[in-house]
Image (spheres, rainbow, N blue to C red):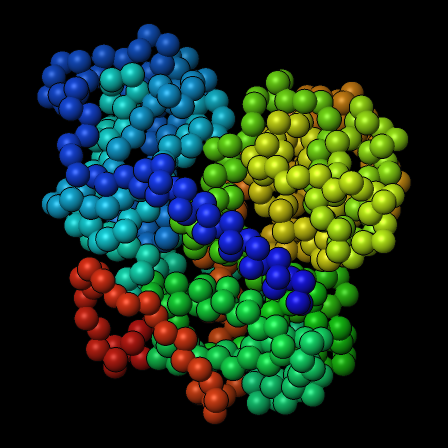
Length: 527
């Protein structure tokens, strides 16, 4: 846990550096002028379409075109279609967007990301509440589809406390009613007695230096917690997602226990009366209730903020087209598992197939002379210059897998007992190419990919399509909200604020203009 917390402090340091660079490079866009002054929407030239592309038939769609889609970063898709109704291949420079306030000047940062032929993701983050937003989408001086788009209503920024009933908010995000992983995780906990859970947990896991856990209570949409253990800094991730959700939706009153470490904790079998523990990683030999990892959770909440690598930025920076990618498998990482050292050996024996190096030595410092020297960190986006990506467990599941799937390279994944919240959706040879845990058939699988290029490319495309459908920012928020809703139904007793619990405060509210809700209304809202 000490290593993990130290690693996170390093990560936050680089996030802060990136945020400073963003400001220095004027990445923040203030929508203070009329967009595209050279275009007159009333002129006859607005819909004179390029001969190679049908702007009229091109599609603009997605949740970011709806004012009720309240997430940290709003996004939508632009799909350029040619005259034959096929995806149009285009460079991002040919397509431009601008997002501005309708009734007043709004501070908005927006970006356009080129995903693949004809498909773009446009995203924008509000830094103040906007009373309506206008979105202009232009390709070579012509409007795309039905642009400009006017989003009517109040669009709240991320820090605004403007909760809605759970049912209404889930509907506005088009969240599924449940998830198979949540059903499986909760099936063994039909009734949860938190008094018993905490008594048992403190007997087994209250060992500072070995375990770190937090007992959370949510009462009247306010968050409280008491943590146990020496290294409890990772509570910041659970704090952030709970506070973010509470600003958007009335959470049910509830209590739960969160594991702050990477390793899942509950090793009891079903017959041994396991207790419900929420963890960021699961395994086939434990009974923890899995939630999205702290990595993808933070990337969702801090997207277009202090986090540089997120699911959307990866899609927009996934390297050259498949045909131009280097026909070599790529891997970088630290020495957190023996198989990672074994990969270095295999790489040296097969340099024409694998480019693998260790970036840090901690667990196997005495082995650095054999497996080093360590190499410098490179941008994660540069991984996708290579056609094949190797995914090997670290201390537990490698939390980079969502981003590898979102890129445009083929993922080769190590067989593992560890899993994230979405792993059981994935199918081998459909979304990734599996290889044995001991790496004994990795070279064989790479040779298969080299000699079956069209099949390999299809698997890579399936993986990216899965990420587009299941790992987007709204999907992470939906998963948490549905998990909370379903978990809370199983609590045996009313939730309460326990002695020595700390109130985790919401950020200061500025320029929100939220409707005022009476406290009684909160208690009556339909969950």
